[in-house]
Length: 216
Image (cartoon, rainbow, N blue to C red; front, top):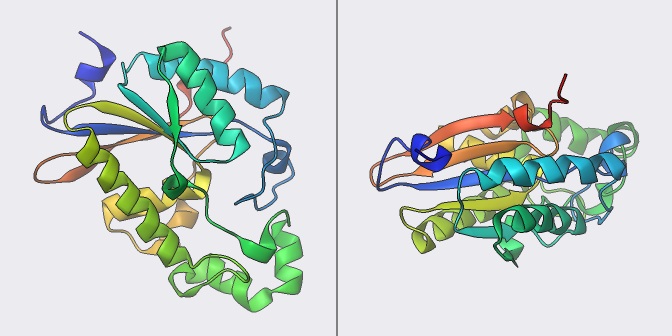
């Protein structure tokens, strides 16, 4: 039996594997990334090769990617492993951090302390200076998930996206308050997954990084 078959609780569901991109220098430096376009670093390149091999076991029928360079490079590794082509979707892009893009949390705290406080404690009230409202980003991403599910009934598909994007989607699945994004950890090159069924949506798994473990 395939891994894909084992992963389904509902035979009529769509399984959407949410893959986070591999590591970039901005991840190492803990900078807000958003619409910035740093490439994968050497570690990230190794990570996405293993990610592609792991995702191929799910026998996906389609791969979608955010337009950022780091996600497209990750999707290319998944495409190589699966023999599929990837398609860019703007609606699974990262949160637009606006003027925070490329800055560290310490930078932001020093320059925008009130807004940074909202980010940490009440993100549902925050519109990033020069950027996107967090609640609007969540709605955008959830609408994208629903559209992908409608386009691929009873299939397994892959969406290569971003840390905060995955966390916002998970909050939608769990009907959790937006502040819960800070209680969720999504590693680079990890996979999470949701099942879109006829009657309910489930979180299938979260932040799986077992494929990245170095062999002993």
